[in-house]
Image (tube, rainbow, N blue to C red; front, side, top):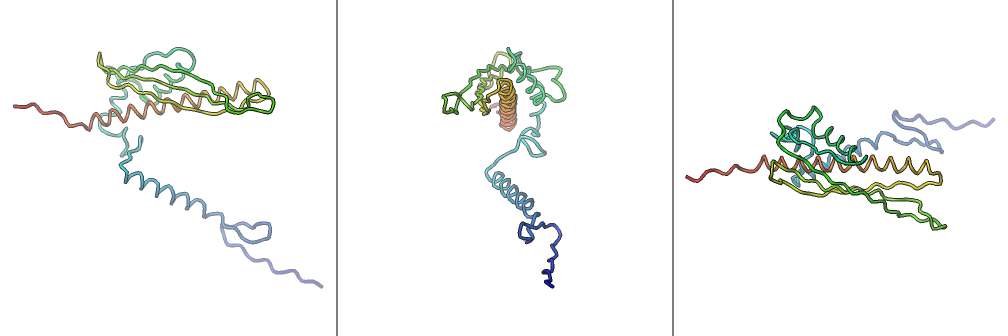
Length: 203
C-alpha cells in the first residue's frame, strides 16, 4: 500500500501554486503603500503642492472663492459645451458667486492623428488631440493666457459603430483631461497671486 505524502498546512493569507507551494498574497498592498509614501515624500521635498486636500493649492485662503467668481463664456459645438460643463463642475461645485469678478475665455481645436497602419494600408489606431487656448480676464485686464493639450488614443475597428463608440469615449476622456488641467492652472495662478506680498505705499 502506497502512502501519500502529508499535506503541508498553508499559513493564513497565502494560496497554493500549481506545485502546492504556498504563495504569499498580502505583500503587494504594503509594497504599493510604501512606494506611494516614498513618492509623496520626494514630491514634498521638491516643494510640490497637491491641488486638493487640507494643504493643497485649492485650500489656500481665497483660492476657492476666486474660482467661484469666474464667468465661463459659452463655447460652441459639442466639445465646447461638454468642456464648459466640466469646468463649471470643477471650478464651482457649489455654484457661481453672486458677484463674479473674472471672465474665462476658451478656444478649442481638435485634431485626429492616425498612428497605426494595417497591412492593407488602413489605420488601426488614432490619437484624439484636443488643444485649448484659454484667457482669464479681470474687467479689461488680461491676467493670464495659456494653452493646454491632451491626447487620448483609441482603436479604429472593423465595425463602424464600434469605431464611433471608441472615438466618442476618447473625446469624453480628452475633454475631461483638458478641463482638469485648466482648473489646476487657474488654481495655481490664484494661489500664487494670494501669496504675493502686498506692495506698501512709500511715505
